[in-house]
Length: 380
Ligand code: SF4
Image (cartoon, rainbow, N blue to C red; front, side, top):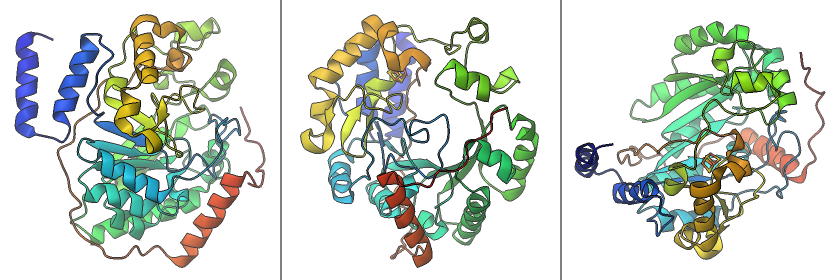
């Protein structure tokens, strides 16, 4: 990028004045100068409402029961203190990581808490526990329903213990609820995780998404963790592949684009687990690279701490040796969203008692590992 282009970009950012833009300019500048710090606060934060889930997806550490971390739920009070701490500098918050966010019974209140402090918030869900009124109340900016198929059978080949019927019902209720609240700034996305067993359903998915009136239809290229999962789940149509086809033929799983000692994303973002432990990014589901605990030490001590600096140094000098980066192409720079305060007020969270009870029971089972075992997904 030429000096002129850089100056013009900074000028435009300053005029638009989205929250966190000075940090973004500083941190991105240091990444480009290949300096590990000192950084200003990250503009993007991901936080994990829980690492428990009901769906048992076979390509997910939580779903496979291969999560090395203890299962638990994000504590509301710790979260609120954390949000108070970061709200002056955080532009966007991803309220999601290795579990189903709406298994946390405080999800709607937590999202609203960040929204009232001017942070853009989004999340992803399998849809089973979404409460339409709760979502509208939360004032969340974007909610993505990630579905596994167009029929119950194909959905459950991947979303093994989830229910397409429930997800659809909750999605339709949400679309209707938003229709009644035109002042809502909610964007509704439906994602279709395209895999070998459902790729023929993609055209039907796109037609359906347009018909029902969501804002975004997203055909999601699948992630796998190893070759065996690749054989089982990657679509036959390779336009849906994130992975290098020639390498795959040689028995090697790697992305089409391999970053070369470079990842500007982690100069601008941090991933916080439910217990406050921070890891560099969402490619560390098992917490192998804990940088510190933000609930105990505060965000900036962790983000500029010795472990974070050392991790960034390894990114710049020896990224090929970092396990996390093996299957990642990097995420580029976060998008800065112009400030969007909660645009309307709803006094009470009106989730139905029946739904609240179902959530509490499912969360209890998922956290304690007492989920009833569903039949194994068939693999073609
Ligand atoms: S896994 Fe991806 S996002 Fe994480 S540090 Fe490596 S390249 Fe960056």
